View (cartoon, rainbow, N blue to C red):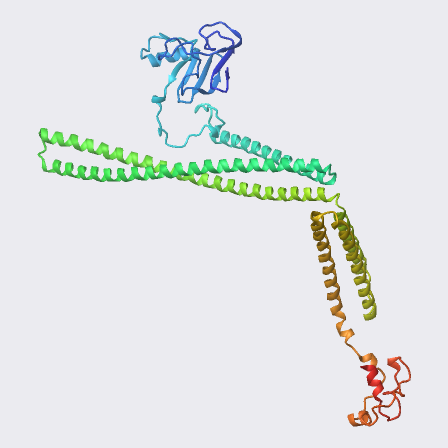
Length: 495
């Protein structure tokens, strides 16, 4: 027995009891159509089972000598040996077996209008038992079966999760391999464009799902509003019925115990009580429906929030991939640009120079000043190289001139940043630069200002005869044993 996509049934194999449903009892080696019986419920026999409007088949089951099919409209069809025994109960004549029933054609044993709901006290779920029929006499441990089915479902979910993780790992490995071994620029750009297209499709799919969930929420809101309206009407109806019940009870109390009027009032009371009970049952049904709608709404809200998060994640990935695509295009166009090559070369040389410079420790203030002068000379030379190349390229046209100006400005900004860094390093030597103690090492402090500078105004034109040598630390003016005051020439030198 086979069920194809449009909801039609095909059969082949042994047909001793008419279990193929093809109108005869001959075996078949090739698939044949399972059709309705002739003139059954006004349906032509040439019509294949499941081909009628609203009656396509959604589930089938094949036994040793019988077959079964369930339609979307809740009709159930059987044919073969089992359906022959079933005709006794449906025909109403229990002493007659198989009368008027064609066993080699499908027979509708259960119709949509025969369906009854809320007939069980508890919840019944066929999915919890793996869609298997558990007989109450043979299956005594239903909880164990449900636990096993749940375990199988959990294992399937775990396998699916591991497969998704493996797919993600393979994708990451391919991405890392592409980074380690980049191909041609065109291949990289093509891959990025494919990724962008895939992300855009995922975003559109998320948008459609979000729209569908929004419509589902609207449907839930409409159902809740209709449910509230029905509950309100039932409440008003219940109030009217209780008032009517009280009036009839009072009339019965006031009426005589026997007579036609008393019997009529008793019948009215019984009828009103039935209406009251029906009102309560309907109200309980509506309350259950409201609870189910609330659960469905909460589930839809959770799925909607999840889809929105997924859409936002795809959008962030799309922005990142677009940035990578733009940078790849820029690197592709800049790989043949002499200005970009020179900029990359000068930046690398500058970084390498200052890296070596950081590894060399300065001994003192003078060493630092020498190193600073060398740094500024290197930066000036680097800047001059870029200026010379930019001037040679600018003569090619206004577009190239603007491009050269921008590239040159990038290098100038880098050079200025390095100069500012050098100035910051110089700040820690500010105290040594302002220290003049070396000029006064070994000298004696004068006794008073008059003794030290008394002859300064009297002999303004005197030559600095007391200056022995240009070596400032060894000046003997203040360190001598004589009390002669220093001349103005010394202070002129210091100034």
